[in-house]
Every structure is written in structure tokens, then in C-alpha cells.
Length: 186
Image 1 (tube, rainbow, N blue to C red):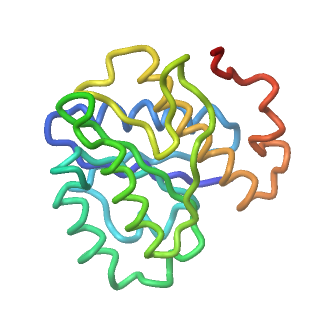
Image 2 (cartoon, rainbow, N blue to C red):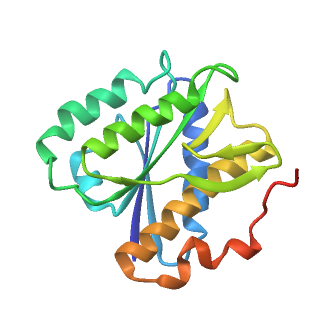
């Protein structure tokens, strides 16, 4: 069984809503156990437990929140090497489009890579004009159907990769499912 942790910080509740959608996507892959925890309740053991992690943060001046950064610096610092080789991805919400959400996702991915996480991009489109190459992003609350779908796609892809890499379930490899996935029509 693959173990996924959806870890998030949410000041306004918007990232918490995204976290629930990411978890929904991860649960769509059979044989996946999912935990959803806020940064305020998470412990180092939760990160050690998981095979894959989706980290969500409000966009704070174009990067991850100070609370999320502090968690990785102080709580996870002593776990260096104990979490090497896990799989990670990112999601973020900001006050509006162009607010730096993709930069915040990249800052989260940078932190994860420094801890040895394997990170990935997502080639799927959530709609004709919405991609999530660096992670799922939202302007404020994830109200639009395509933004919600982007969160689900991110969770599903994380669960697919952990199923392949940790459980050896090659049938879950994303390339085996590409024919049924939507592509943008130009």
C-alpha cells in the first residue's frame, strides 16, 4: 500500500480546500492510504511515514509561507537522510492570478529536493488553458471546476508515482494511462 501525506499551511482556508482536493485525487488510485494534516498538527514522524508528499502553502511574497519553511528547517532538519528518496509535489494559492503561485510551488519543490525528494512535473491539462507543470495553483479559493480538477490531477499523479516506485505496481505508471487523458486542443 502506498502512503501519501498531504501537508499544508492555510491562512485563509483556501489552501486547506486545495489539500482536500489533492487528497481526493490521491485516493482515486486503489491501494493508497492518505493522511491530510495542517502544518500546525504535523510531526516529523508523519513525513517519515509517507512514501509521497504533496506540500501546499499560501503564496507569501512569491515563496512558501514562513510556517512551512520553519517546519522544514526546525522539525524536519533532524530527519535529514531519513526521508531521502521519497516523492514530492507542490500546490499553492495566492490573492489573484499572477500572484506568484508557480514561484511558491518552485520554492516548495526546492526545499523538497534539498531533503532528497524526487519531484515531478505534470503534463496533463486540467482544461484547455490550465496546466500544472510546477504544481496545482489557485487564485484565492479553488472555486472553478478546472482549478479543482488540477488539484485532483496532482494528487492522482502523486499516488500513481508512489504506486509504481514503492509498490512496484507498473500498471499505475502514468504513461500507461495517457491515451485516456485529455490533451489541449489548440
